[in-house]
Length: 99
Image 1 (tube, helix red, strand yellow):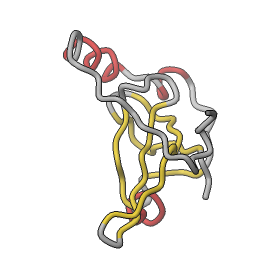
Image 2: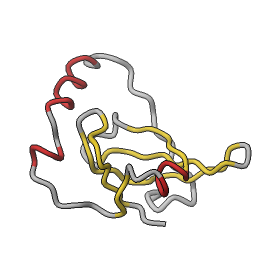
Image 3: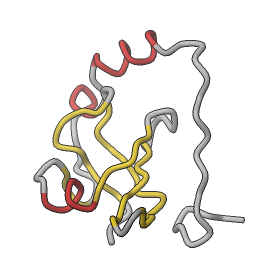
Image 4: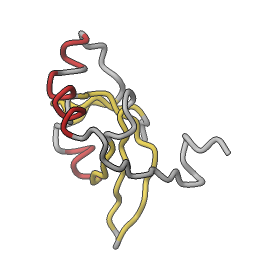
């Protein structure tokens, strides 16, 4: 499975993400995606959404800065200033586990 993904639409103003964890929950596969530029922007998505929805492109697409970091990102950061940040835990079998 590809670890690097580009969202077709900005998510909190950003488009480039890495798949850091793959987990099975109740028989369903889910993925923890983290922004390349800001680890505060992370979320879980399903196999179906990542692979079959048309919302994602495998690999990173070279985009102009205005398309890869949008005004939505500035708004997101200003609205979430001072909020607690949820920690990200990397699975032992994750490509990004370096311990």
